[in-house]
Image (tube, rainbow, N blue to C red; front, side, top):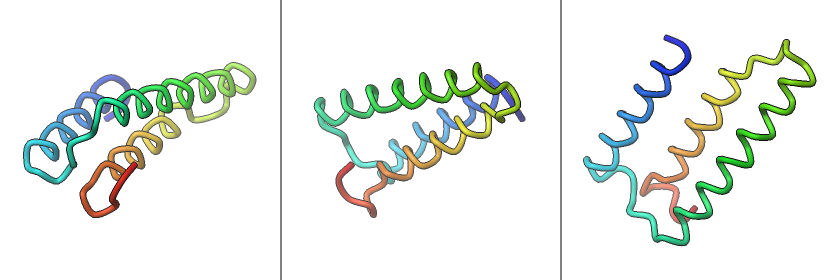
Length: 79
């Protein structure tokens, strides 16, 4: 599964983890920081891809998303 479908599946998993109590509740400040961090990372990866289209952009984005979601779990503590 690639592209938008893969992102939708991951978003659904994140929602399920949150509802199941696996992902901790984030404060407004933490949410704002996470959004800024993700936007910055995605923008940076896109710029790298523009400079070198051989970069597997989707795999890089998926890895970032998985690590981000993992950082929100209760076991890892604060973001």
